[in-house]
Image 1 (tube, rainbow over the protein chains, first blue to last red):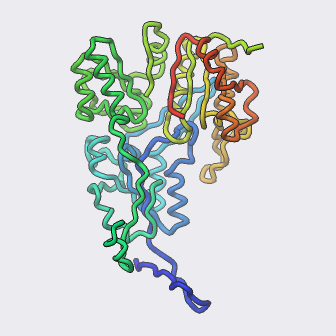
Image 2 (cartoon, one colour; image 1 turned 60 degrees about the vertical axis):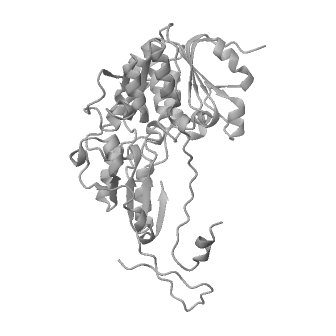
Image 3 (cartoon, rainbow over the protein chains, first blue to last red; image 1 turned 60 degrees about the horizontal axis):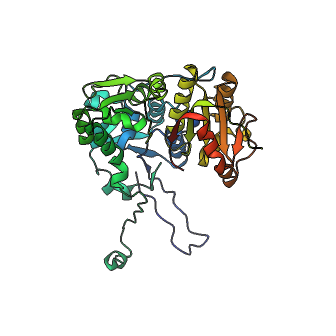
Length: 148
Length: 117
Length: 135
């Protein structure tokens, strides 16, 4: 994929600005931020939008966020008052949505070892383990790097 | 100011902004307190919830090793474990998987002091 | 005349900001479990937790464009549902200063805004106090 070029400073009307076609890199470090109050609009839902609007997203999971990739993760329903809330944040399901939409989902190996013992067999299919720090040297290849 | 960094104008460089500091005591001080209470012979139950359930994994934190060795009781929240795909994970020995009904029962016990970190 | 605070078994003081962790989820899970055991519970919110009971939140969260027909309850609805289900057990208070400081107003009718200096009276009315989160 060709790298986009930046417009020259003071560019005149004849200059054609090439679109930056590089993907973005999002990093999730802090996980589980409001199952009840966020419900569907969590960082993974936002990531679908980033992917769609910014031309493609790679998403790196770090720390306990790697548990989002646990194939066996479930979300029990909870009762408050007399009502059962069935719409708590479901990160495993949202991760599958990301994968189906073409987001590349990566998970750091030391975090997997620490928080999801059992190796690749425990991961949602499609999630790729990466070595710690493996992506940082590739940050210049991304249009934008951000925490989400 | 790193003049080498500024002097490299025109070449690709990185500006990283870090707003999260590592506060050592803020991270493990509470667990250290739990060890001290248990070592003093006080009956202590450590209920792990939210991100805390990761401490129920074997080898996760030497302070929890010390806590259990000193006679402390460990419980891990069922909802938090399920969220993290750890409902069927091997936990530390003698870790009780509990829920909010259990926690409520313990909270209502007049002999129990509750501290939430 | 000072407001009379109904006596309860537990005062849950919720101080952390919503949307930053599962703290609100945990606090309300515990509150529900206490209520189901027949306990009387006060919830006192401080800081950004005071925003949980604003009527402006309406009954429903904004539409999920990816799942148009699913019902997503707002936090105001969750709180009012608990208050309606346990009318003589659950009492909800909000810190007036924190609420005003964050521009939150027009709370659910069952929510009583209290001055920070009144917190001691709520503590005195509970057998047990649990403080969850930091402001």
